[in-house]
Length: 254
Image (cartoon, rainbow, N blue to C red; front, side):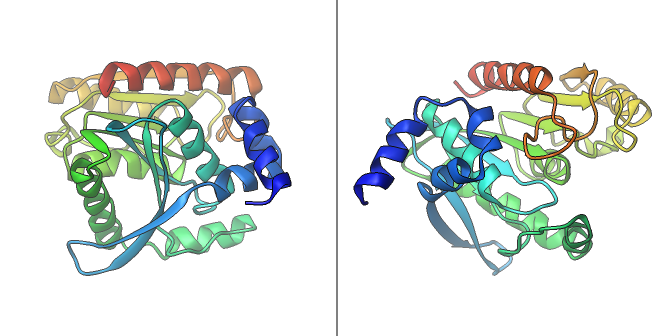
């Protein structure tokens, strides 16, 4: 590591997550500090992910699922931040290394996702985290938009200790929610035209019927309000959601 690079990494330690995410150069530097790991899934597919290691081990683990853009520097930066907070943070990839630059590209990538393959991938990575010697066995999932839906899907596919959904698809029936073990934290936006009140209120009712725990928060914002690189970013609401996220992680996985 050259001197300039080392100084940049030291400087990152004192910056807020929002500051890093909003600056492509800082996000790229934070992302570069992650380790690429691979596994062969239960279904026989080779997949890779980006791993951020905390200062001390064993540590509770968090599996991150990316937005429709793919596993980019932004998501890797969030993993780096979680590692700073003491978590073994694994940012998985459901797009096989592809990262979208435009909404049309992102839509195409989502359209190419095979639900069975994605389920196999999330299950395999959660199992990997539970068994890793650097982890305590406690695992939570977190995702945004496309990844928010898959954070929930992962928790339905394999037991985890907590699930965090940022404005992700939660259109589930009570009968589907039986496998859910840990509580769910949801961040939703009042102005969101897709992940709207009707969907989320329906989900809350189904969770209650299934006897599951949901903590849902609403923000006077729009979809993707926690993404500083987008036009819908809401700094205050993003900060509040992140505070609630970290508090939830402390309660559920330590």
